[in-house]
Structures are given as structure tokens and as C-alpha cells.
Length: 188
Image (cartoon, rainbow, N blue to C red; front, side, top):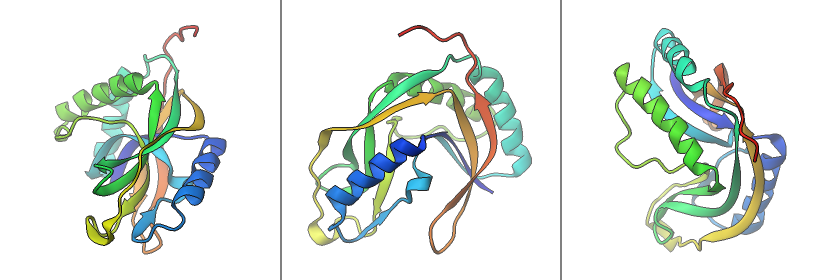
């Protein structure tokens, strides 16, 4: 199965992101927009993996990551990879709490690497993918960074192992298992 670990977003945050994507980007051509039901923060893309291997990885990740206390992230603004002048991926950024997502990602990377999964080559940059440019460099698509749009606060108290089934209409994500963050929460 094709799988990844990711943080789910609440419905109201997905609705707000979707409304702003429609408002700001509805005239852009050559972009495959992510369905709002599929918005999430990816922690680790696993690729093709046997279900048993994924289950073992999830169990080990759960042992390490469940000691994390729940935390919050604030989603705000749009950006693009690799650059705004030559976008391939259009994303929503994390204004605060990204460092905690990064720490969670690092624990997952350590466990996954010990299980034979390759470490990510690029520096981890937590985000929510909202669109993929079909023909990079084609059509002169240039974006402007928009940092000031708040999309809401997400309480991170769990993450999921998702199966991603590719279809002509787009991917379908199914939750295979979950890890709940159960460490002692600090008062903000």
C-alpha cells in the first residue's frame, strides 16, 4: 500500500483554507487543487509499504511519540515550493507551533530510519499542500507570498497512518491507525 503519517485538520480549518484557495486562486490554470477533505500536515511519506511493515512502524512510533504532550499550531498564509517564481507545490504555512511539528517529525524519522526507510533528503518544512502545478515553469505562473491570512488553530493531539489510494479523480485517504499524544500538557 502507498502510505504516509500525517496530522489531520479539523473541518472548520479545512473549510477556511478551501474558501481562501477559491477566492485567491480560482483563476489560476494548470494547477491540480487538493480536495479539502485531504488537507493535512504530512509528517513522513512512506511510499509503497507492506501493511505488516506499516503496522510495526506505527507501533514503534507510537511508543516513542505518544509521550509528546498535545500542542497547537496556527496555520497562516500561502507559499510555494521550490520558489514563488517557479512554484511546483502551493501550500499553507504554519505561523506558530512548527517547531513542535518538527520535533515530532524527527522522532518519526529516527524510528523509520531504524526500520530501513530512507531519511528525507530535504530539510523538513511543515505545511499543508493545497495544490500542485501540473507543468512547472509552463504558463509563467508566479505567486505572491501571502503571510497575513489566518486559517485557524489546530490542536495536535494525534496523528494518523494513512493509506493513499490513487484514482483518476484524485487520491483517497483512509486511516489505518492512529497515535495519540498523551504526554503532560503544558499550560499556555
